[in-house]
Image 1 (cartoon, rainbow, N blue to C red):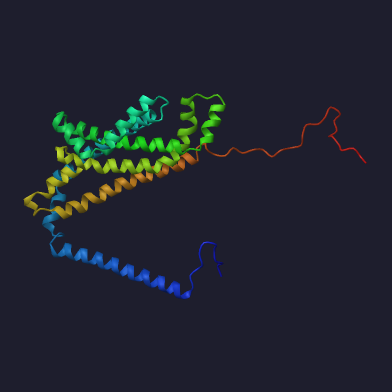
Image 2 (image 1 turned 30 degrees about the vertical axis):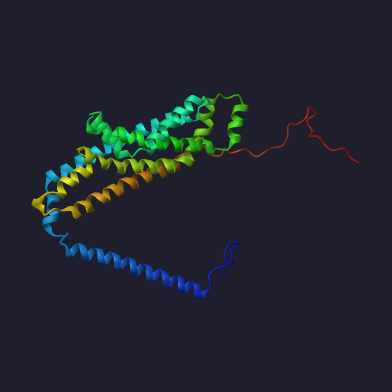
Length: 292
């Protein structure tokens, strides 16, 4: 039998039966909720041919693909600019000069506290910027300020001895940050960075409020079509898995990068040869201890 651990006692036969009963009841409740949801969808006619018919037309398919392409374009631009802005603001917050730190902190706190929708509307309406640049600018300012805090906290989380050892070797601050602190902090920051990029990907859907023809805007045009009996639920059932799939693909890419970083020659352990016998003395004989 398996021995009990130091943290908890292994459940006995009655406890295991009780846990199995709880699991079975939970599964029944979840299946009941799924069945109830499907019943409501069928009862309200969400699976009728009329509501699903628009997805058969080539024009509708091209509209969705064009909206998806616009969404990915806005996300790619916002992601790159957010990472750059976050790095610049993080460098400012880590600066040795007090005015630079205060200015960077003011910018970060302001744009991090400002709702992203308000920034997008302000840039689009007040500054009269086109929909795509307005959307990208709003996403960049918000996500860049959040990523700046992620970068700063990641660098500060590296053990202080690493920094002190690098300075003791005579390295400059730029080299210390580039070759010592940033590579170690990146492994800890990667989950938070990917989470924030997922937020940026989902926030691209705010573009339909400023008439940017992204994926959600295309779905809204289809869902509000009276000729197909307002297929709102079918559109949601088509668009939602695509958004979920893109977020999962982004998370998978982050995991792949993390695994590749662990296999990098710079981070792998270096094999050390087994120590051999010491060098012989000029006499050709190894040193011997004196005989008693």
